[in-house]
Image (cartoon, rainbow, N blue to C red; front, side):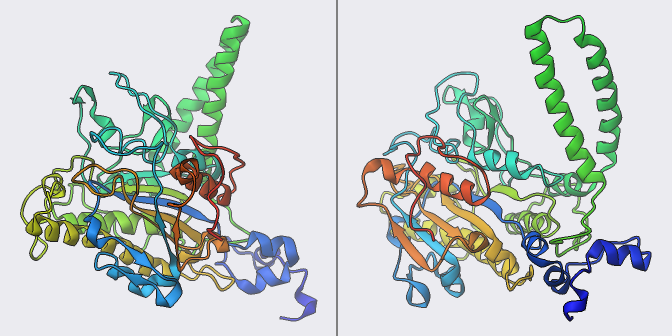
Length: 444
């Protein structure tokens, strides 16, 4: 292209060509449109969290050094090809947890809230949902909350069992039950027929609300206004889901799904189930259907078994995590941890192959938090959360490093400091989250 083409826009090209379909992302158009359009052509940053339960074999979870010279434990060896794309974090914890019973060392993982032993769930809004309220304005699905092991219902130990099955909370009293059926996830991303039906209902609700408002007192009018605002937000999401127009700026790397609609039944093979959920997250990010996703591989006090792995005891993960330094259990524990790390490596490999323009890949434009809700599962030790941050956050995270906060004051070892730093990189205007005292330093 030469200087004579500097006034060309994608919209103008489409009008001139009489085209009815949007073009894919073309770097030359971004160059021609100048600074503002070039900035718009940058891929968005995505946030994800992948969590496995019941901690790690403490003897085989470590990393040291930087860059290509970083040394990794046997558990982390699947990440050897991605040393420059990971940040290994040490000595972060949730509200000064040390050790104790399982709850609430799981459901508060992304909120830092100190949960109460009440029959009605009471916790705190999780960081994924804080981010989703911001990025959800740009996508048809605000966030994906997924799991492989189904959540329990009822009570466990006198508290709602939802505490053991989710880390996502839209408010302090509203836990979000994860979706475990791949088909349901796929349909939420791509089936808009139900949304169109919902829109007609919303139209009727808004019309009736306007008629009702006149006869209400001031306090009830305020409540009704809040309700109508939420309805309008839902309307906007439906509009985005059923009518996408991306004529200028960055465009998703996929225009339509590159995988078949999953079968209706729940996959019976754990390995296939996990990979399908990872593929759905990748697909949602590539098509910009959402920019926030959480995936729970197994719930707290997990009943999942990993006897399909060579040399692993055919016992429940929870039982194996209480190893009492038994060599056989420790070996099985390590191999299960490594299997979960292999899932992270799989997703990172897929993301690194996705070209998102401007010399970046999807892995460059993601912040993927990976780890467990405790360190040594035998003692329920929550003082040093095993945590890896994958990706570069749109160029704001260096990678190839180990960050150890162990020498810092206790308030600077809080996981919420990390969450605050990640939310800010997602464009959320936030000065504090949970029990944070400052955004975690050193990521850049």
